[in-house]
Image 1: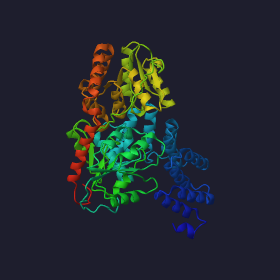
Image 2: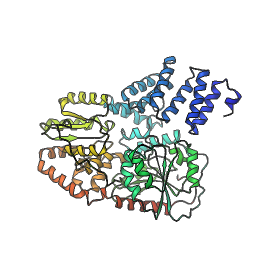
Image 3: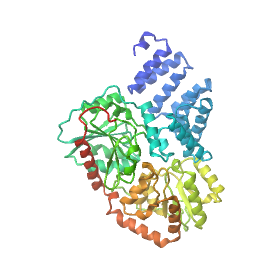
Image 4: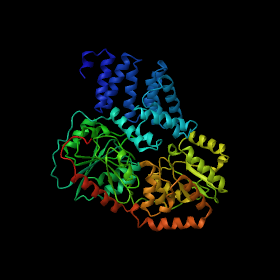
Length: 561
């Protein structure tokens, strides 16, 4: 930090100062330093990149993108600038443009870190499948070679191997979130009247994780647990944030604190159990737990897979999502909940008025298959099945979300190549009201799940709305979640043991309306009596798991091997 004072006319000094301030989460001060560096050297590539990274941290993606455009105008062959611009485009959900930039990066440097995975993930968002099998094979080969080719969350949408996912997570941890050189927790057993339980997340807002967990936060037994929210992002606008704040004993916003500072805060608070609700998703910060600030550190809910980090002690699961024969592919100790690992909020409202089919763009008559998963979960193998179902069931349609223009265009092309009129694909626009979305789900007849990445919150939405979900379990955590939910609501007949059975069952239900009506009636009966939507029961089970973890916590700060 003294360098800029000692050499105020050197752009490098201001760059270094800005980088230090950025690590300290002093974003505005960092921007001032990068701006000063660019005044001294307008073509300073690293300053352009670092400045835009701070803007991305502040969610000012459009400004970051403008900065990259200016820098690329002066240096169009820079792989670093092109990759950074692609990252910004992906953050803006402009996946088709981002894919072009990642492809340009790889044309300059075929081994550019994570560019291959980013390109494949953007193509998945766009349902651009023309090189799908080759892409998946190339990513798998890169991981086997120990190369940083894809980030763990993206790999979950691509990989069918838990061992491959563990390898991917270990590469990411070694590259981005290695154990900190100093361990904060020194092995003492805290003597608290209540277990101090901290939840860490950037998603304490209108996000799927909070939608699922809100009822759990409110149902925690405050005589036994002192609950703490550690929010990575500020948010004073969403209704969910306003609801969540009083659900905790303490609610802390730490956006402007570094990983080390947050870890030290947890240590000073003598947190007994730290629960990472993000894993490798969104604005995650695994680096906080890399300092080992708490005796027990848990991976739960947000990331459906292993984190591959020795400083994460446990992963919360159930025996469907992680069968006992798969526990060796998880770096964490697997803690099983008795019903399902996925929480639900039984107070969620569904709009009283259900729209008409015509209002939703659906045919008044005819069978409505739907899959409201995000487009990156769609694969050509499942789409083949869905199109065969449309061919076999006269007047049927497939109802899917309208996520981006490229996906709409490509899905229509894929349908036409399989002999299906593109009008039989119906694209549902985004609804800002979750209540209205739940109501419109009632218009569908059958929800078709995806593989290798199942519907998670989306499947819970459908079941809550009374829409049967048909799934087939895969070989990974993410590919077995829908089966977990369906078991927990007592509909095992909707879990097909193979894709062949999945297709046959969907066809049978589309042709036998009486059988489908019986399934819907059973779902309606079970909704109020089975475990899936019993928030209080779920919370007690989760608290028992936490108490057992704390009781058996190791009395030393050494990471598990």
